[in-house]
Length: 155
Image 1 (cartoon, rainbow, N blue to C red):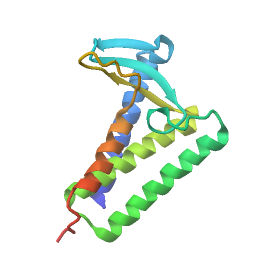
Image 2 (cartoon, helix red, strand yellow):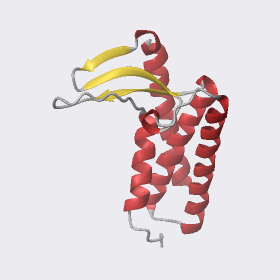
Image 3 (cartoon, rainbow, N blue to C red):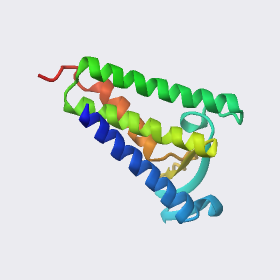
């Protein structure tokens, strides 16, 4: 479980540090958009009150607290599953990524009422209208790895 803790801790810390750096220190909240490597990478401020890509976005307190509760329940569920199944090292890291990312977004919802999304990538004539953050990457990577990695237990 130490691997899960440290993977989650560093994921959470990296997520919160990048959000603070980009949103507050670089002033993205006021500027709205910063070109980093146009047209491939922009920092574009988006306050997401919903789930991925703004799905089910609602400006209500009930929705906010429901999503906070859901993220916490899923995180606890993953931790319980990991403690019982004891997957190999890669599975433990994946669980840490998922939990650390989920907790990073929970902190945003508690502090700001929405998740701070800011990374926007486009390519090859496709202009991506959505933004995401480090926590979203970690949640996706962790969930995908938990699904795709062999479920063999550690010996």
